[in-house]
Length: 114
Length: 112
Image (cartoon, rainbow over all chains, first blue to last red; front, top):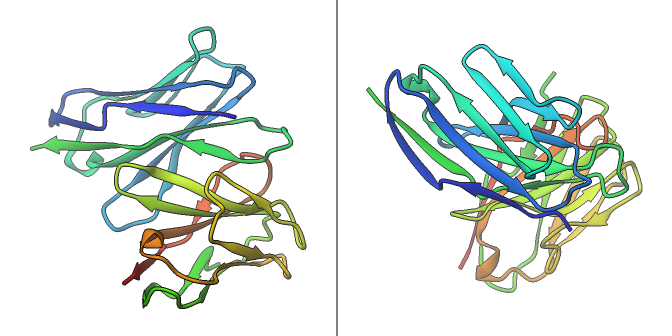
């Protein structure tokens, strides 16, 4: 089955700096890779996702890159702000597959220091 | 729309007691999921459903049962609670296979 590893587990940056979180996946058939943000005491919410037919996707200060050959994908946050502080989860899954489920990474606690 | 709601928000159980967690969604989603979240472990899938009347096992199904008698509801049952089931439980729903999942607010469960 799919396994998703996420690094680092904690990340501290200064406001305005960039943050990068990396994930690797094991199932080469996986074709859908979302990122969720969870603020303290809140529910996870989707912030961006990428499918295997593209290599990069951007949404304002957030971007995700995918390397299918190496089976890894990354979240990039530029010009970080204190409100970016949260736990970020990557996930992988097979859209259209029989299993119909996502496997989540263990999360990265991002702290943006003002 | 309320989105995804969960009942209760917090519960304390004694070892061996049983309880049912209720998840409800008003988005007409076919797919529903139950996860547990533990420190350092991320979100682990317990059970999921791809439609009314169907259920399937996830990564950590032992000790839990589920039912999806109505499309909008997904129930998670603990027949005999154990301290290892102390966790935060999240329900989620989606329109289709691995599409955006919308999470409920979570249920914090403490088993003594």
